[in-house]
Image (cartoon, rainbow, N blue to C red; front, side, top):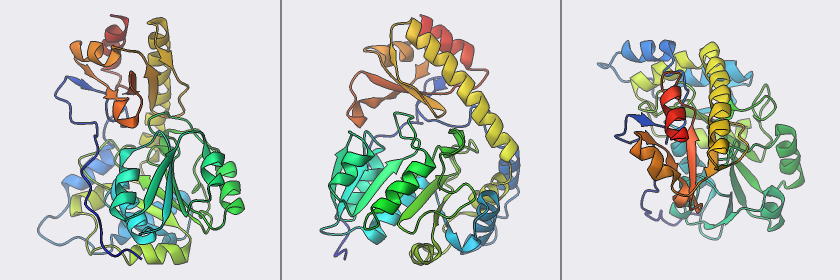
Length: 329
């Protein structure tokens, strides 16, 4: 049981650069969903939003073809991760993050009082220590690698005493067969965390949801405060969940632009790692400063424990020529 929450400072994040082109946050390269943005602008700010955000739960259930009782709306993926670890963590709970990974995994686990370690050798070595909770990104951040849903489901079955918290914030940009919620409810010992801010191109509106087996989802839902999403966020999330054409088109453009970045970086002498998302990781000493001098912000990955590494998001079509020019330069 958690006796008290333990304050921890914020971890470094991207997406706040003053440079003309900001590739430190990985968003839909086609920009905001017009359906979501239009719905947000029409939201009635003179009334309280639905205290349970039921419209988002219903929209996400339709999208993934799962029962609505398995969906828990939250104001963004990081808030969802925090909720999972506060509910299931606590003093003496062993939590392993599959690294290198999003800094909020450690922060949320330590706020909950967990004994947190990061394992970079892979899922099987992480599970060999029999942690109570394992947190992993699928796709991983910043590496952009993926685990097949079938393999992840098999790992859940083989380790029933471990709770798998699966961060699918970028799953909409990944190949088919990656998400644990494509037409099915996750295994009983898994919680899937989904973000809508990336795929809808609206990071200023915090919106996402959790998907879990009905009993576990009920416990997570009971942790929520009333009005978990503001009226504009709820309207955008509900409308945007149905804008699959925009999401799929953004994923296609993202793959194409990431491929062009990879080719350019390789020719420039960088070590580029394979990507299954709308961003890529590369090792190139001096690249972050060089790009910044050309007006392009990348994500310095030193905070992930990866010195000399940079993560670059897929640029928009309008940004692409200038980014390629900066890399060549």
